[in-house]
Image 1: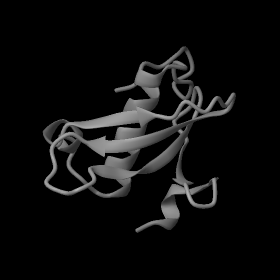
Image 2 (image 1 turned 45 degrees about the horizontal axis):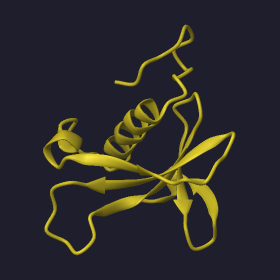
Image 3 (image 1 turned 180 degrees about the vertical axis):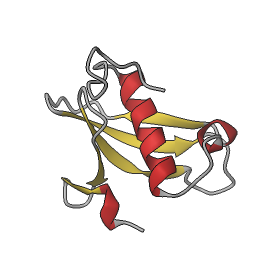
Image 4 (image 1 turned 45 degrees about the vertical axis):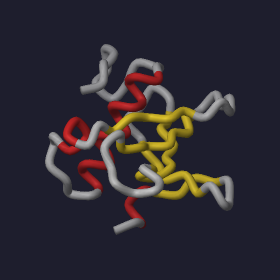
Length: 100
């Protein structure tokens, strides 16, 4: 669970908090069990691109049998629980809910 500030919608502005917010959002969006991130050893791969408003994150699985263990690219708004899909090819964010 991400560390929350005084307002329950404000999240600590840290990579750890953003990663936890992202994992929870992907679990909800994909209708997965709550233990999926731990079971598959999900981890966040943060870009070095500086942005004052969001963190661009590659979500990866530590346990997988595929050539690439990338689950997807996402953008997490700083200090919030807002998660967007990051379109690498177009260098833009899109709503997470447009993906099944």
